[in-house]
Length: 511
Picture 1 (tube, rainbow, N blue to C red):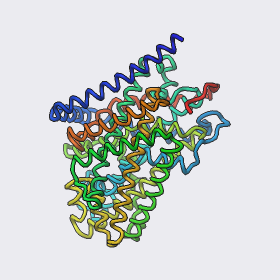
Picture 2 (cartoon, one colour; picture 1 turned 90 degrees about the vertical axis):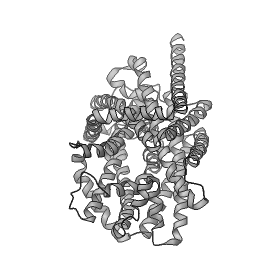
Picture 3 (cartoon, rainbow, N blue to C red; picture 1 turned 180 degrees about the vertical axis):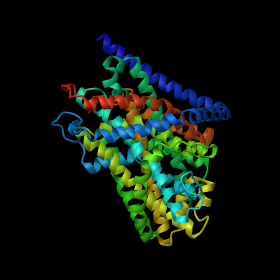
Picture 4 (cartoon, rainbow, N blue to C red; picture 1 turned 180 degrees about the horizontal axis):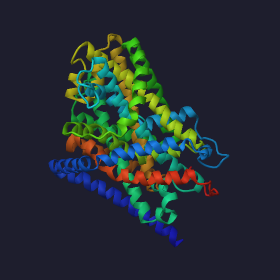
């Protein structure tokens, strides 16, 4: 009884400290926006200047481990009891993977990133033709959204799922370290510190995604409703999303999150087909296999590449290191969420599903949206790049407005706006659910409400202290401790999968 009381109070102390620290951060930023911005930029520069090799090596190493685990005989074991079967159909499972792991970032970066890389990057020769530069631009974009990031999710989700469904542990980020450090340390101070870092990673990672995506949503709403494209409008969108996200998470996974995720996938598929039909169809169909082959040929060398000049280092810090920090920040959130929905799947099916399906979606999406924008840019210099230079959020709107089918433009803007809205909601509700799992308050509606609105508040804070620069800095900063934890989790994963199966606990896991 005394042990249960200590654990209960430890949970409350962790929750109180997390809330206090985030409120203190927001209050500090509100008092002195310039000082808060200067601190975040200085910390970001410290990470990118001294630890870019650590983030790069960690992300690439984790991917190689995930691929290696596929080849082991034990990969046929199930995440759970051997008689367990998946709770969700493959379609529902993939839909939730897609919405949690990719979400609105695809819309925000789908045109802006290829167009930006088309203007210059370290991997294209100075005398490259327009088509060569376009292919390289899409390949770099796919690289940033492809296998490397999903490898982090696969290893983390696998460790947490095995701990939860084979050992009866709660679904927490610290559970991923169970095979390495044992129950005593996972339940002690080390486990609480790890879960606190996971909470910060979830908050700042999701805040980055929401903060970036509301700009795109504002950009699509402006021509539709006249809503001004400014910070005030975007802060209002964040608070509306927070309110609806809280309502969604209160309805549960099976009702709210699953249904919204499936709706997102159907809408995304419809939008994708519409762009293919309205855009340069034959050009896109030829570009898709070329982009896939180019990515496959370059993914390994690009993964281990480190800049050796000041200009290349600046580029790598602004793009690749930012992305790896962002993926690492998202890893606790997505890893725990994937573990929650993956009971009963085999280890091999789990890794293949988490790695391969999303990457094929990414290649297709970036080929269609990035390829359409690049085709327009090749035909008329500045057609999309001028909008992207002004604000990344405007890239997709410019691409849609340049389509030669004016009758579809308004409809496509409506679909994109609605899709961004639902994606933002699923990101926030999934993150709220994961945070409550971390704090062991997943059955308390009041905690879901509190953390849903706190996520919205932190997002608004980051937007105010520096916009995109502060959002990127937050992910890079939290990515450093997360990289160290991922190295430990990788050892834990290898130990768990390679070792003979343990006798399963009868305690079960969270429902």
